[in-house]
Amino acid sequence: MEGVAKKTKRSVLRREKRDARKEAAKTGPSIAKLRNVPTSPRKMRLVAALIRGERVSKALNILKYEPKVGAPKLEKLLLSAISGWEAKHQDVKLEEADLYVKEIWVDGGRILKRLRPAPQGRAHRVRKRSNHVTIIVDSMKQDEQTESTTIEKETKE
Image (cartoon, rainbow, N blue to C red; front, side):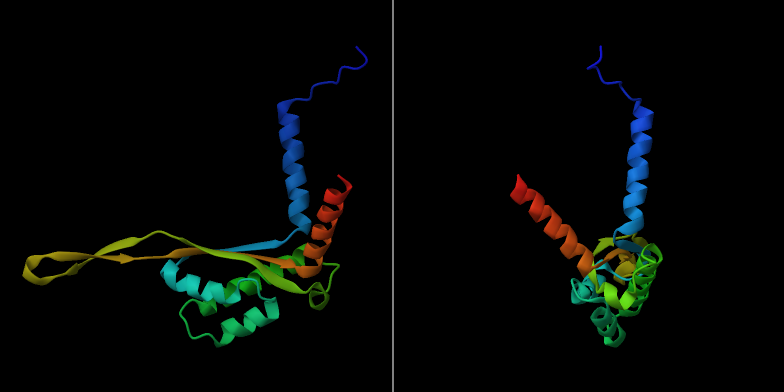
């Protein structure tokens, strides 16, 4: 009976897994979400594509001078993501971190359906679309370190 491992409760395993996720969230990339923006997802995706993969400073400059409708809201969201990253990594200076937009995506939100009068007593449906934007900001240096460790692990195996 010496070689038999003691079985742990499922609730204990679940709690340990949850705590591990919380610890990883404290040091990883910053995620910011913007929900129910009253702009069509198609228009917002055009602006999101401009900053995908760019360094944060360049992305802020792009959004500041972009005339499209979603640019000011995306700029504010990006500033929020940067602020969240600073809160997680208080020991690292923002200038040294070399932040970039790791991922950004736009999902469709709720659709408000309205009616508009049409000829001959008919009515046409007007669909007022909205969207949800999610942005992930991370440090380039951190990504390089994680990539190098995964490559080292693969070469050892």
